[in-house]
Length: 209
Image (cartoon, rainbow, N blue to C red):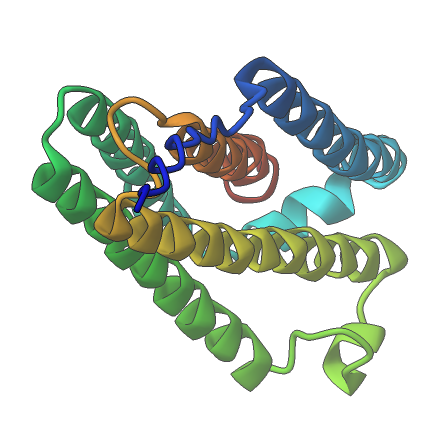
């Protein structure tokens, strides 16, 4: 009685186009820069048209809070960069901890922004409020841009937190590992973009008096 020969083991090779993934991420980031670049252009036009009113409105923002949030985001850029470096060296636990620190810093940024907005709203300074509508046109435009641009940025912070949380799970499960860090690198690039946008928003709204 003859026995059947064991079937050969078939090795499945998963194709990865890391360079294509990186290029796709850079193209996506470019569209984000175009979006905010258009808003920065609108801001510049109206600031040129209403220089004194923009100057007066900017004094009503808390520079200290803006500075603290800037420090928080710069630190978060460092932690996410260190997480990538740690994973590339095979230090999985350290990479997870650093991504977690980035998420905590992002949450701290949003909490500060929440209290800042709450204070402004309590003072009657919010879109279409009676107090704001009684102000000169330049101040109305200033706070309209302030809420739109910082609000859109806060939304990007939330999206970035979601991306980094997913990356943290991927690292935990081994989907993202020292030999394949492209996804974490892409998440890090997105987070650096979020920080870069704030670097422009901070002086435009908080420092230019």
